[in-house]
Length: 243
Length: 126
Ligand code: SF4
Ligand code: SF4
Image 1: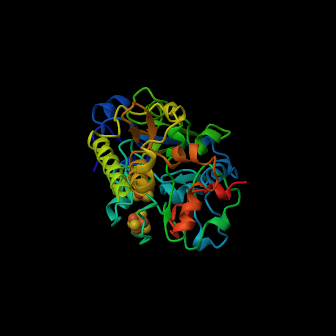
Image 2: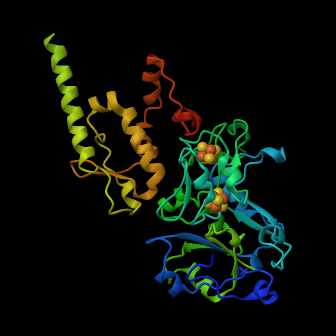
Image 3: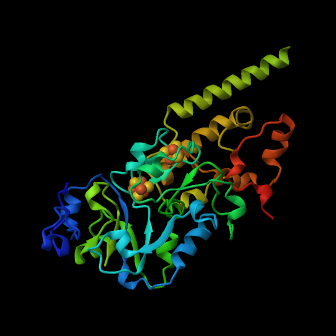
């Protein structure tokens, strides 16, 4: 399951010898670039949880505002593109922090949601973004079952009345379709960074091209030990955490 | 009678022309600078008016697929060399100067496309 270029064994998991997969990994940019999982660009994100203060919701609010994400009060109907969750729940017991840290779609290189979708509504773009074509979605929710991270939300009712601060810049969704983080593909198209990373007051989120050895994300990955969510599943997330 | 034939002829010519654009690979791969989308020449529509009147649904369906799947690389090049980002916003960039542009015909023909269930219609804006 370990892929070339990834995973110099380090950290607790390996030291204790309990787990065969490295929980912490050190990505060497040159090794990564010499065996890319795909040619060209692969958008990814590195979240430095040490910089992310407890109680801050700037990124969550920015995301909600920029994509007309509805706010439903019933927790079973919540729609979220990004949320904050206890670090241990997210990254496992090797994660030292119990602080709430941001979690979003990992834009996996081997996305199980894509395999599950019967209509090809979720697909992986050639720049690594796992996108949803909302026009095609039939609302079967197979992707929600398949995603091991619970990052897909379903619109049980019309989301429009539940949008707190609507923006005309982005469409809404309708009842009966799923939605999730798009890595702000709409903003990337305009040459802007994702809303969350661009508005984080602490600079905790770094966005960039994982396949470019000179990008900020590659430099961070090369100089820090990072964790990904459930690496043992082989979904190859593109979102990395520095603990 | 004569009149009707000319009309049919025109439509056929327009359709052939459109087929020719599609066959020559309307979307270019050489990708991206997002700035291009902003500078599209908006004096004439992407296809002749007559063709758009009868076939805008097919054009929009094609744009929708490409825009959703290729994102920034979804471009269309017209034979006279203009480049357009395939995006509903490109259409609305010109056509929202008339808030009733889509609606007057659709109301008259009693068709109810579901575009505006999600996309923000010019009528929803102040
Ligand atoms: S995190 Fe879930 S929704 Fe996102 S690409 Fe991976 S499997 Fe799909
Ligand atoms: S809910 Fe939509 S996107 Fe998800 S698997 Fe079903 S059709 Fe595909």
